[in-house]
Length: 180
Image (spheres, one colour):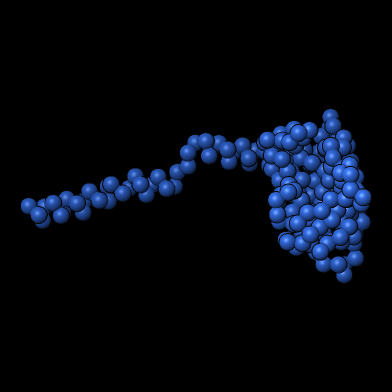
């Protein structure tokens, strides 16, 4: 009888573990839907950004793999190193919208923050700024001034923020004043 029970357990064990093993490869529907919506938004953002570039005849841009677009205005000396994660960055900026209906409308500027320099400082890679800033400034150096177009998923995403509607790509005219 013991041999029969042992043999039966060897047959039942694989059948009992199959559902557990196959469930590791499935996601709940809400996770799949969220991921699908994020991918759709990335495509929508890129269409909006491309429309902006076309409307303004901008062709001298670089698109990063993250989806951020950099448009050079002034290049800093190449002897200045690129910004790295952990660097303290001081910048002057103007943030505006790129949509057809609100293009050029300024929603924020460092000059409005009541500092003597009219600038804003942050540590690259730490919280306190949108993630798109951390990514974009890694491609910049002291003395650079670039227009940086950040897709919504690297800005304020589906939640939006105060005057920024949900799923809104943003344009920042950024000048890097100092890097430490």
